[in-house]
Image (cartoon, rainbow, N blue to C red; front, side, top):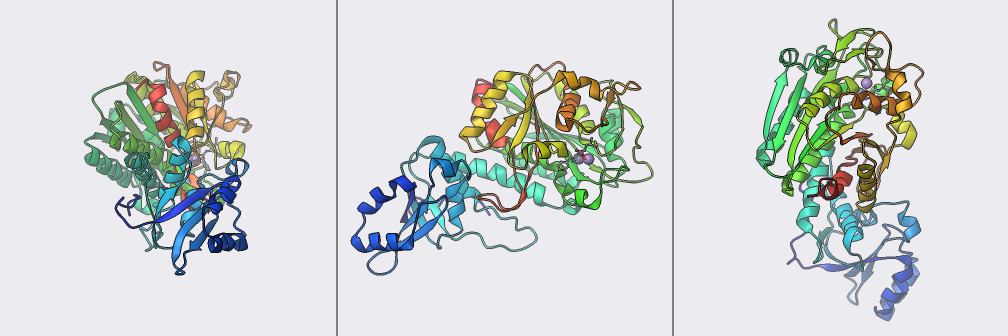
Length: 461
Ligand code: BES
Ligand code: MN
Ligand code: ZN
């Protein structure tokens, strides 16, 4: 079901998005009965609060939706999205003082509140529809919402229907829709083509591991996105306990997020040469599974001691990053549900990221704030490099001690990017643990909209 605005010609009711301080000024313009109704209702314009106000004939005349105070909005994103489910089945047009980023946030929240994962169960879409106000870039917002919906669908689809093959099919479908090309390297060909760690992680599954390589665009700077596509993470032989395995269908959240971002970039026809690399594997258990203690030789030639088969993401990403680096793009961005430690550090709402250039980090932070996609910089802390050096090989995939787990994973990845000065890595969660405005419980994109907003500055588009 597409996340779109209503046609401008529709008959519509006014929807006033109002802050607590502006409520009195707004009600002054209404008639006595309506003022009494609003006052009797106790409507306070809290974020997402809804009040339908009747006209003289008793039918709906207008809607009031609380935008909340600045302080309240610091706690709740997407107030208008929150309101959508409480509004009656009708078409509305927005009346507000909002402009720019604040207006975009309200409208995007509205669209995303229409998202449902209905592949396995029919679900009622919200009945309330909105006409985009003049001055808003409705097509852009719809493209962003469509990219986010793709990310959510891919994450929400269980591993039974979203293995490496189906992830490749999703990338191909996206490519066909936007005139991109896709090449893949699958199964034992990974060994012949020099992607041994993708093979090592994925070979125990009956579903062949692969590298998906999507390319699009003929003008502008080169941007390579790399997404962790672990379609299910059992932990391998160092098997995860059941409670930790429960959510591991989302371990392709990085791949889902870069595909969603690619969809936005292509739909908006941004002047970039885009490459998307996805190592797609299932981290499974079998007689031929990689073992703890095995030493792998990576594409780049660096040797890696596998001290925990559950630290598989950095292995598959390392080969994909080495390949990305060989292309010497202007910038490489990786996105991955890489460590539990990142969750402990910042929780599910914030997307922690690392950047080799502090100007890039500052631009990303600012862009994330503008578009309500919060991201937070973490350090590539060089003094911890020694933690990933096991002595018997060049690198250790799972340093003992468990300190600074997200940082050591990021440092590990950075070893594979040596010829591309600008590298950004996101250690995302990709999951909304409980229903929130515009984000139902389930898969969610993180960092993609921040990146999209920052691209014009980052790459001087
Ligand atoms: N996919 C997991 C990380 C993860 C777990 C992300 C839970 C989000 C929620 C990853 O492959 C993993 O298992 N990482 C280990 C690494 C450790 C063995 C060094 C972790 O974080 O515990
Ligand atoms: Mn793992
Ligand atoms: Zn994993």
